[in-house]
Length: 580
Image 1 (cartoon, rainbow, N blue to C red):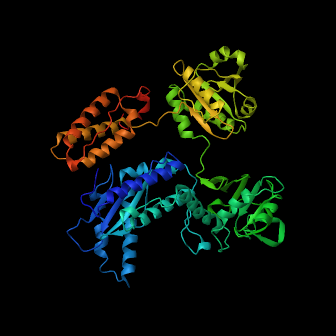
Image 2: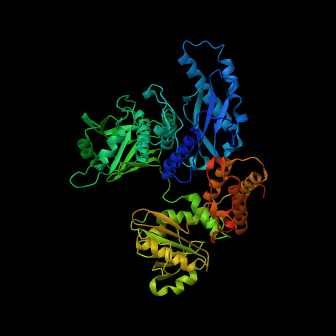
Image 3: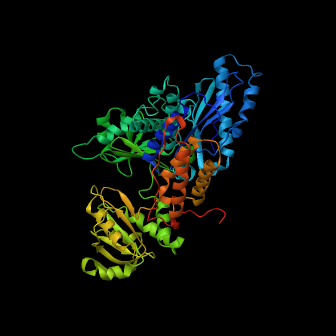
């Protein structure tokens, strides 16, 4: 629903689109399952009653102006409240608006599938304009998050509970600053590059880690220090080891080797040399500013205190942050990233469910377990999960080691993947062949930038996909993991039918709403894979009618390409509807 019924400023639609594109560039690069959606809420704070109290700039929005009318009650009670200055009144109003907007968004039915985050406002033409960013709630729940958003070391200042929270904060702050631009030409949501924003967010999150040291000084140096330490070699060797960040007198730490003079964290070469002494039992002990020696974690750490973190230097230019054995941040070659499983579990289960129609949860769990074990194979490997595993082992016996059927488990996986070639198994984890050299046909879906392992897997899949149910897991030597086939996400068919109905409504009404037409067409362009032949014909016909209807509006003739059905599309790409 489009809630906007007036304009605060001429460029607000342009600004909303720019904010949306910036969010997609930032969040999609970190996790393409987050599906960011951005809109703006304007709340009038001047006395011009000729203006609407609420303004929404919200493409294809699920909210309407009526959802936010409760904000008027806050404006009414501001007058009897005694404040010392106009700045204090503005702060009071802003804080109360933020709380109420958050309450409204949390009560909305959409909150079951998205989590909403709100920026501080920018003042524009008598309105406080807030930017709201929505992210996929189920994906957000997969990230490990602390519970406390404050620290005594930062004098009760708010801190980020996770790296994703720091990224959201960085994006929203950049959005507010962009809205304060004096002209449209100055409106640049990503005035910094994507990489700079992500690094800035990592700096912010590392303040949370530093605060656990209770030092209270130089809380912003740890991120750069870890990057530098990880880059240094000692006598040609990579720096491997762990460093605890906690208060010097933490009850769960005991020093086994105490330094007479602590090493400052910025004395990088000394820290790197001292890291040579660390092993899996003895870790560097630091409060984020000084290294005090080597020590151990003793007793049972109460993770709810969130007072002890571990920085693990895994290899040259690589390090990660852990709390309670959960990875919260990964950094490689100075570029931070959201930590997630090497292979996405949700995607793995979804793909196998769609390819193997009769597979059950127990089979999926066992296949997932051995797949995770296979990802630990350093030289890479291929798992071929096939309904025709037994027959293929016979056919490919001359170019493989055919084995007596054996149920694979975690212990066996390291052995059977230790030689080159694929592992051939069925959905019951029964293995029929190892070291399999896959055959196949030349494929247009290959990738010249990838190695022989990936491209041979693609060719084999193209050869077998119409013969039997088959999924390949390709684990490359560089750590990249691919599922073949790479299935598009499932969608609700009802959402497509709803948009077609909206397009029909635009045809049937006498009014002209080119803006709504453009929004619907953008939705169709993004989801064109999911249309049936009948739906393509219907959409193309309605589109042509509206293009003719709107041909002279603003002197612009609008032409969109016709849609054609995708031959790979079938009903398996539709999610089950709630009422089915």
